[in-house]
Image (tube, rainbow, N blue to C red; front, top):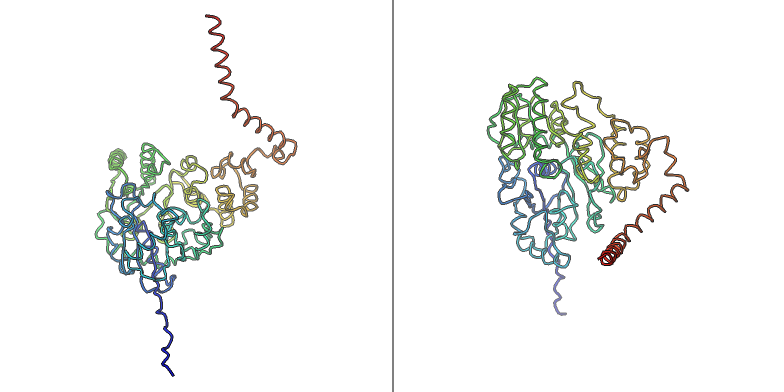
Length: 474
């Protein structure tokens, strides 16, 4: 009988994990998740660094920051997303649908992925660069990690089901202990907590490698966020907010103050604060070193941490047990537009949970059931199409808790558009449910739309008549 060769057994395909990060805080969260064993084993792990600064050419990426070398050891390679898609900007580029297979082939060659099965762990799935990377590898399962308070809010826009259904888990820090995030729950994605102990251990590594910090220990720490870059405040308003923080800190009895500006903030803000500190008789230290605020917590042990709505306020309180205070959230709640702005939930949580810097007494913290109800109400008002199931919870909370203080979390116009409690005075609450009044309102809107469409025609006829009469008079 002729020799029959044994059937060929295909070689096992390797598994490569891609980790996308745009901040050192996000990379630290990934390192903590890896240390805690929350991610499956892989043959190869690549950290993809995205520099999303407005001008990446003038702003160093986080892999150049002090201490990054300690995180680097957890990954086999580090790749630059900016160099990969150059000359495009990471927040403005995504592959055209027809080009996605070409980009996947290109990245497999460029990054040496071969035929490996690819898994992706990324942040901010609803926007680029995370969305772009997910589109380049359409068969890759996704894990999303949250590096801040935005995970407690709803997905900021309706996500393509071809992307959303690929997400297996949401990994997040338990910044508000016990509070369940809303992000991606419309796809049934479960949330898993990255242990705080693992995260603080990573921060300790960064603090050890960051080198000396020239600032007094035990001073109050004021954090800048550069909100004018997000078009939330004007530069002048943000300057005044920083001065307001400094004044409130000094009024609380702190004479040594450390100001950590946002890395992209203009230097003149620091000069103005120094002048104000001299006037107040305080000693101000400006830290230009690009280190995490969490590193300063471990190195300086500040007596007080002050910010507007930074996630660092919650990490200071939850993971380091430091006293914190907020400033300017009332202005932010008023200015955020549209109502669906993804910063709304972080501002709301900070305002509801943390003491006001300028208030003489600390307000009582919101009870957990009330906080969950508040989150449901704000989340539904932000994204009713994505989370229609939250409406009953939103109605219950608004009916029971909407008062002079909590009204700041909602816009009357938004409540009216969604026919939610609080849209109109209680004595007129029957109006939205009255069939006759609803019929009149529909007719009024129809007439208004008709007049709006015909207005240009009316103007044209009036102009023609006026022209004819003028000729006749001549």
